[in-house]
Image 1 (cartoon, rainbow, N blue to C red):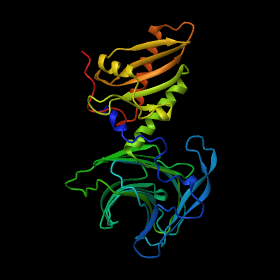
Image 2: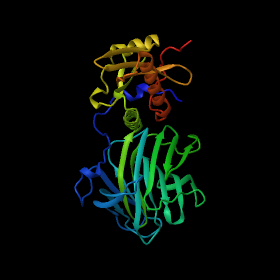
Image 3: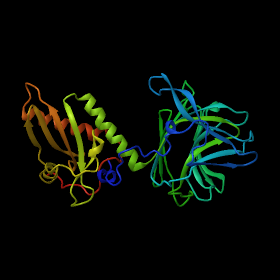
Image 4: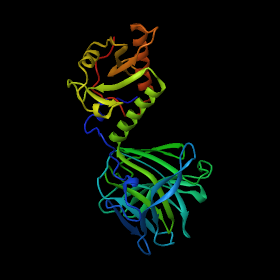
Length: 357
């Protein structure tokens, strides 16, 4: 696993950093932070926020949600409608959304744009053409597709409900994505491929396709990893009913005091870690306390090379047969669960604690 923890420290958000929370937007209007441009013949496409019944991706149960509906302005194959998030500009980023194509006489295709350059002609695109069961990763330069690859019917997973699902992350010259549960990635050569490292993100619709985008989530990669890490702690707490509180801490930089980088309580994030955490990081020992029927356990989190990369501190409800030895074993089991399930890139920095002998 890559070294990871301190990247979550600076600017850890107390609220969702997603700049496009559709359920908070007025219906029937274009959000103020979006702008619409077109490429090719025809009129400018139309964009609005509306309400649709959207099936849950796991249960299939429908619920009313705000969606961003984009309708392309011309049926010509060379017409594209691009809806761009004006600010901010993203480098390492995460984009997730679900969408369905509900109309159109021309080429029915849609997807997400990332790292769009200021000229609004250079960008990367991940798009889907459901009718022919094709998906594309494409590089545009001066408004023209110049590089990319596609996978077709044999590799394309088509959702039964028609809602395509995209989760994409871009870091340096690598893009990774999950498209309808199929995972792929590409690492391009910057010397032979147009190399865009920062830019705008947005949505792409071809021809006169009418497309509804649901639940778009746009974050920096740092924000997304921290969000996933908090979700992981919550999942662990649900699955381990003795856990009353759970915090994960690490140093933001070498020799700096450790801070809380993830917690069941949002107010804890970014706060100085308990003094016992420093002792755990320095001594590699477990620490234990018991008061009022509640055990407090602080244990090191180690990577596969037995290197300490953080500390987990938790409060556990006591049981009749509970002992210090059993509680510490329970705490170390929780630490291993965190390491095993943490999102790649989410945890720990190259500035690690000292290595165990």
